Image (cartoon, rainbow, N blue to C red; front, side):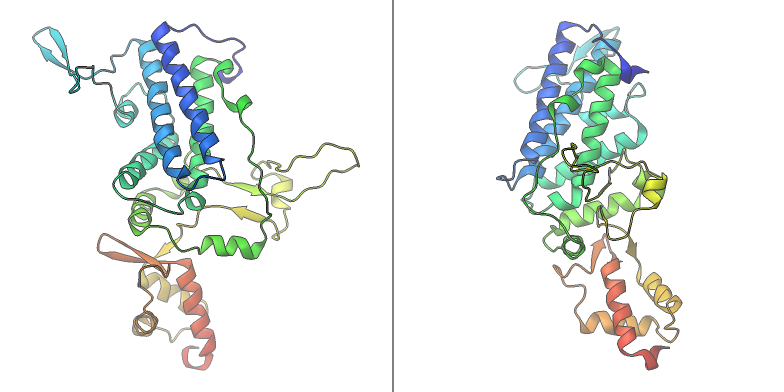
Length: 328
């Protein structure tokens, strides 16, 4: 297979320089994201990784002899488009992904399209606290990049040997993860963008690791004293070990799903045994709690439609339990 190439495939000097810059941008993006002193790291990561992927695909198209500069045909001649300063205009990442010769996997491309759209949001408005919500998608972006550059140009071009997992000064327990899941502070424009993008995906696309990479973090000790031990152990999905993991272990994943329309909330509450609960009760409840107030985190407005998060469903169920006789 391509990933097992033992030597670097020969490429032209321009393509080699593009690959070099691509790798530098990718490495810089990860190093910046793992820097605990920075608070603007997600935004920097997105910009640098988009540059990195763009250069990688430019190198690929150059190697394949595919013209990746914009041009107009004037008779039988190509007239290349220029920037204001007179440089040739090269394809942006989205144009590279749209080409029918693109080597990028379908769901890996969806991951990149998500990041491109997110960049459009953050470049026009300051953001905050988006790291914890999007790290699984950033991880997928890195793994996809490393896999593709090795498959296209050889294993020696991989960046995995230069990177390691960042160390943490604290551990996570179940309560802390729950707080992360319900954390406030995700800008509404970013939340709305994520919601709209995700709702357009099928469940298979959303759960594909090439779109968003999620892992189990399992506390583990060495079997014998003096034995080397890894902080993080990767477990193959569907394996006996994965099936046997105790529920006390924590799965770190994004918290932007699931989302529910009001009718779905009422249906789920009825299915939980509160058959007398109806849409009127639901409306009165969210109005009394001002549950749609920005910052409470109970839901999100996408276009003109309001979607409730799972935390709101839990709130409604708690309300019904407190008035059990009325709603049973």
